[in-house]
Length: 262
Image 1 (tube, rainbow, N blue to C red):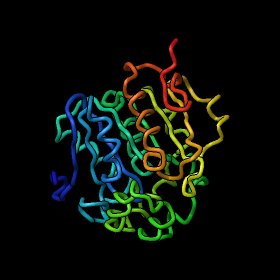
Image 2 (image 1 turned 30 degrees about the vertical axis):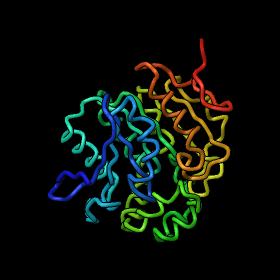
Image 3 (image 1 turned 90 degrees about the vertical axis):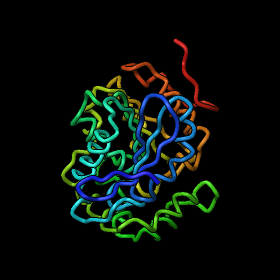
Image 4 (image 1 turned 90 degrees about the horizontal axis):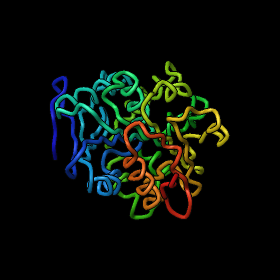
């Protein structure tokens, strides 16, 4: 287990591979651990980091640090500690919000962002996500297949207050406008069958700027990276392979993810 000290508290992280740096940020259910298959897919080219946010996994449990702003500050401190100046971010749920806020605050430090199950507004969040305990959320959102065991194993480590405080903090954020603040490439991914975060209508794509692309996995719930791992990892690696500044609009869903040849 790797760890650093931030604000006199332990922050746990793991890392795989060599190459350009990228960071995975987990959501409201689970920890860094469910990113392992995606980290393995990315580690052939990237140095892939994944950390536990405040209140989750093996990172410190301190309610004073559970606000969205403190989670963004944690990411900032982590990148400074690792000596990372330019980053690709992949975030899920809570991690998607944290990643986008970091990118908005430090645009020169972020090359691209992939967000999964990002709430498109507070009205798109099922209240059960706020009210249920971590074990209840696990049974609600995760299947019983082997792929979900990593998330299932670490979810009970979460402090329910970290979930509740961060979700309450979303009230002050314009979630629909948040991706529009980015100049970097942004890929938004949703599971059509997600009971926790409602996917935006597909026609929303028509109003998005050229640097943003939206993709819906029709057979996935809240965890597309676990429900359809091969398709997710193909999409992720194709997105990461785009040239800096290149639009993600050329990524399409077919039988497998492929790059469109211009």
